[in-house]
Length: 544
Picture 1: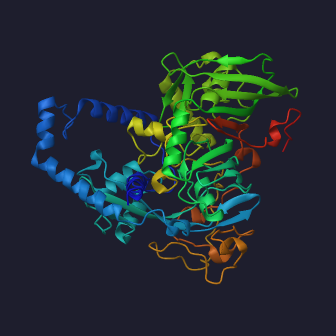
Picture 2 (picture 1 turned 90 degrees about the vertical axis):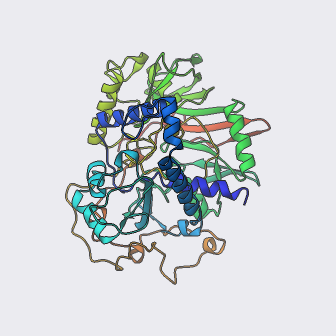
């Protein structure tokens, strides 16, 4: 029980941070900024229930009072109760299955329950008012239907639409979940022994569950198709970044390698393709990087930022773009991408840092020409029009994501190992941030087809039908994806918006960013992947 207990607690506590609605819901920038500032102010000053700032003596009295003791007791009891819930078991993996179509890995829709505790600012408000105001993905009428139908519950019990939320109420919402497709390119094993698993991650696949991705993630695919379960993530890569990804097979090994990364004992080398003819000499960029917003996951070079260093060296030039080697000596969020933007050689297809939202020079030399508030506003406005912001599934745009900045830092690590940790590859990482994908719904909904088979009750997970084909993969505890769409595995929900909308498949260019984690070397170990095609010096991008 010694090692298992932290896993259970971590999974329970983190899973409850998930959103309650499947479709993305973006707050106004001013509200988002106000939310973060207020959370930080309350934390530092110790605001009371009425918003009044408490002094040290008053704070102790409030904490020691009868209501405080009752609340603490209730929280402990609830955590103990929730810790008894099933952990990361086969039930999670068997919620649904994959199929391959048009070069994409797709997930059959399935039912899923999002949970979260009531936030302090919601206490005393009607449940319907809270959902109508803070979760604008659906109209109030839809939330009223869910409450009356019992699929949106409080403490797993049906309540009236006029129910007023209390401290520590556990909200749960059953949704018919549709995931975003990713590339069907396989995850390849670079090295595996009793302590570690090292893989070459294809671009477009998130490392762990976040936002619109759950089964279409590295940890789920490794568990379902390679029978590699209970892996500990040691570091992370952006969804669009490909390359080396290291997992620990034991907590001890994961902590040891995490310690090596934190203490900068690991030499990391990336390769990328940038715009223009990069200088021939070795370039060392030591510009400090500041996080502009943890909520939307964007950084910039700033004197107020943290020290970081990246060494760049050109490997070749094809007449339009350059292939360069990148060696980050620190692990700041989006470090390589931000430093390249500052130098004026952004990654060719970087959807964020190679954009005029950073000014006509795209942020070269730190010349953005607008305040942080204006940048955040413009980023969100452009995202709403182009659907690209937060596409790593790491942005903080959801109301039900962690609002504490320290937690947000841990959730927003980019292509470098910012705030690395031995994270469980389980729904503890279920962020539910509503991150969009390049799949954009067509403007005209398609008529609803006849349900085949009839939709399962919301409480039942989607299961493969009896008599499914048996393969070598299934006999060895692995699950191979269907090579074509199987209509017998499709579920239809008459109340699900996404069931009624036809989505366009993402194009190949939407699934890759020309940044690849190439080589990692630590004390007594080193790993390296093959280079992607675009990293060849003479490679030229083909017109679509």
